[in-house]
Length: 183
Image (cartoon, rainbow, N blue to C red; front, side, top):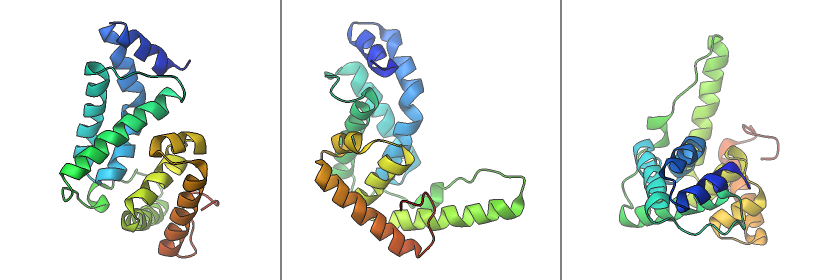
């Protein structure tokens, strides 16, 4: 049993202090994941808060069939999908929220910024489902099984989706590969 599931068990048993460690552990990753849906950091932050609020108030049943993180991201995904149904045009460009990390080597920082900018533009131009699968697998590091659970797909569907997403990203980026040689 991982820490998240242990803290959640305590929360469901009435320990109000158990929510804080869950938030500390999963907030940043969940917010980045939800950002891929909304392309708006403020909205992603609100959806992250809504996810934790739902945990606290509704206390949905965690069966333990997946990891706690997978289950939590699945709840966040449902909240984001509901939000996008209600607000289909409330998005901003990924470039408006793009933050670069500073570096002492100005030339390397510039090249890194250019690569990040090209990658962000290419990711932005992909279908939402492609962005989501690439984010879950390559940025969050979820296994295929966990990604299947989050996206509600079987392994064959997910394999095909990931293949098409990588192919689409490759075509947008040209021959250059940014993340990983597997793309």
